Image 1 (tube, rainbow over the protein chains, first blue to last red):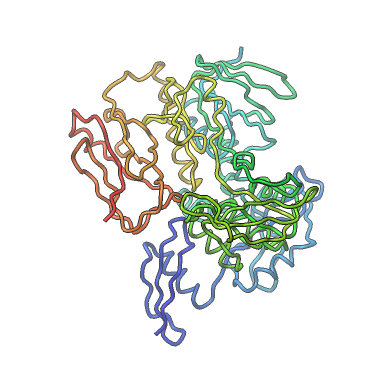
Image 2 (tube, rainbow over the protein chains, first blue to last red; image 1 turned 135 degrees about the vertical axis):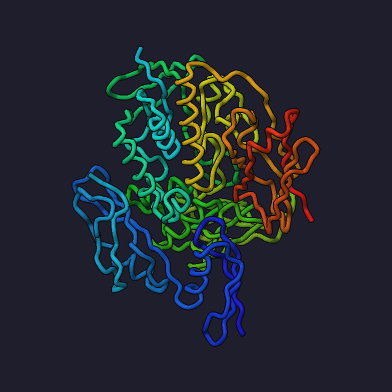
Amino acid sequence: MEKRELICIGCPMGCPLTVELEGGEVISVTGHTCKRGDVYARKEVTNPTRIVTSTVKVLEGKADMVSVKTREDIPKGKIFDCVRALKDVTVKAPVHIGDVIVPDIAGTGVDMVATKQVL
Amino acid sequence: MKSYDIVIIGGGPAGLAAAVSARKEGIESILILERDKELGGILNQCIHNGFGLHTFKEELTGPEYAGRFIDQVLELGIEYKLHTMVMDIQADKVVTAMNREEGMFQIQAGAVILAMGCRERSRGALNIPGYRPAGIYSAGTAQRLVNMEGFMPGREVVILGSGDIGLIMARRMTLEGARVKVVAELMPYSGGLKRNIVQCLDDYGIPLKLSHTVVEVKGKERLEGITLAQVDEKNRPIPGTEEEYSCDTLLLSVGLIPENELSGGMGVDMNPVTSGPRVNERMETSIEGVFACGNVLHVHDLVDFVSEEAAAAGRNAARYIRNGKAESKGHVVTLNPVQGVRYTVPCTIDPEKMDDTQIVRFRVGNVYKKCTIGVYFDEELIISRKRPVVAPGEMEEIKLEKAKLLQYPDLKTITIKIEEA
């Protein structure tokens, strides 16, 4: 049996978690104080994921940059592919919160969306 | 002179939440004064996620969180002025401000809400020896350059201080193609949230060196490198532990200081521990009708708590305007932070006037493991809360019940302390 100690990143409490694994299968999660912790622990030891945030250039807008995020969390191993795919992306103002900036970013099936309004 | 019932100094998260809550309490005449070109304050440059879990039960980025409050301010038709710098506030609540359109002007406020936020501790406050080359930034300045203006400050980065902004910038600079070589922290513990160590440093293999500091800065025009050394328990560098790092950028994430020049100028009673005003349970300062909330009051880790505190300030400012006079001075209970507890917000509570539940927030001065937070009504232990670990980087809170306080008519002091096993 394998034991892994994690810190939950679900919220700022940062609960210390212990996950017990047997042959790659999660047997138990302890230390969490809410459901989010259990979900995070199971994902983190099998398929860790993160939300990725960045910025892209805006043309003809009141600001030079607009902030963006992956609408959902994507596999950790795809983070750099995701920021690379944003490298030369520009958008034309106006941009609204939730506008899709890059659909299906880096083949993750997840859209990159704007998180700020730029008029 | 123009007059408003409530003038709010600062249009960041605290000012916005205070304005929304005061309007919802029925105050029509509200003005927000903001010195930047847009509302939202520091949240506009905090493009990472992790905001709003308490307030909106979902995880938002900084601009999205600000957007929710800005939308409410617009929908409620609350007046605001941008590009407007407040120069002075008098104890009689005359606010002197200036902007390009109107020049210098004065406003008579019925109540004032201080919501100016905080600023970063600068390099000057740290006295790092060496030259003063280009390439040394506060972490927040670098954050603004990268996220709002689209510039990269450099390619090879060392970060001094493990505050949350430094940790967030370690990840951000890495994602933008820089090499972040190390994060050095003077204290034996991190000043940031644990989750940020995991998702900003561990995820990218960036080492965190505790009990280390920068002892030399190299380069005359542009930063060329720095020397780190380990420090002893009195924070003195230990000879022989020096390590050299080549880098073109040094980011400083060494603490935040509430921005209280205006508060001090108007004669508000300050708490030297937080560098913020002393407030009672209504978030009211020592000057009646002057309220404070957010990072100008004490530096927070979580914007959700800023919004909550600011909503209380807005509600109470509205009540002050509606009543048309200050609350009579009733029974005042003093909060007494001792033994590991550095301060409390609020500083005093009036049991008659408090809400049914009062959250008292505080920070501890050191890392304590397997400890108990003890709350005493005078000599009597009332609350005893076990905590696996408390640390200076993470704000703590306790809840006081009005019903309980009212059972103690002669109560003078509520003492809060850390008790180690």
